[in-house]
Image 1 (cartoon, one colour):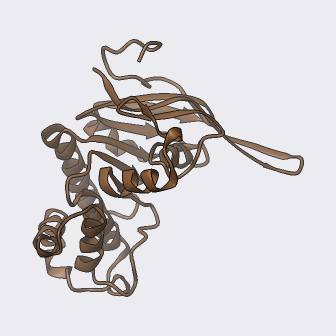
Image 2 (cartoon, one colour):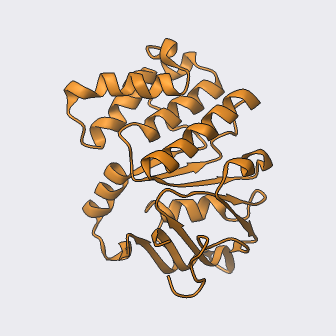
Length: 236
């Protein structure tokens, strides 16, 4: 299977005076179209840092991130911004919802940034909220939503408009078992039916049953499962 999203020999190092922290250490990861992959490991293992580099929100200290074979380090700021807006759906652990907007308006804003015409955004936003069981809360601001509801708004915003890549940071962290399962099934469907490449970082062992592949991460290093089934580990 040909990968559409890759990390090749990626490092992320933070230095301050004599202090040096190697958050990600030589990571290689390849994700194919339509594949649902989990990166699992304990807190502090480098999962979120790796996800941020895959999503063009952090620049690697060394190594390359490739999107459909293109090294994104060669892109300028405007091109990187367009890549994030148009092709990547992010699910943030901290939700990152706008307090002054309703749930529906938060999703609509994501659609507008993705290039959807204004006449279509309301209906698309409502469909996305309905898919996560929040259609009745569409007109509520974040302050009036529970943590789990905010998480589901964040997921609806990420999925609305059908992005090519979906990157989710602990998407079940604020959800009960029932809603967590529903969200994982929705992400799996987006991968398998719409052909999105989906990467989830988590330490929740319950998500493993939904995955095509589980990659383990510890102390900034990826271990087993870093390449799609049938792909050679050294020649992607």
